[in-house]
Image 1 (cartoon, rainbow, N blue to C red):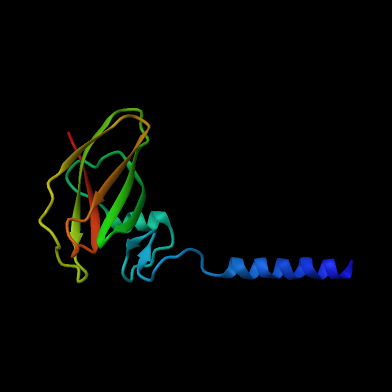
Image 2 (tube, helix red, strand yellow; image 1 turned 90 degrees about the horizontal axis):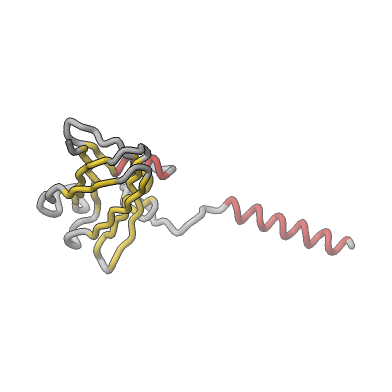
Length: 145
């Protein structure tokens, strides 16, 4: 009986020690697979604030819920989840602005792409960096009249 109690306590101590360790496989300078440099990111909402910018006179009435990244070969792949939490259809435009490792422009400016979101709908916008120099990005969104 005493040995089983000791074993249970040892297992519990290992579990607690394991929970205190850093979780995930994130490389330094990355959050949710996305490059962040020295920016302090502790949640998905922090990452969204760092990676999303709104432009133009009309702000779209949508929420950017997630930004996640991975690499395909030596190209950065980005997924952005856009959510229309209203019942009305929302028309917006978006583009990605790409930067190299030094923060300089890594590709020509993209043209605006239209996105039509039905009421209470989510859409995943997926893209791949235009070249291997593109190491960082901003997702730019603008409302459309």
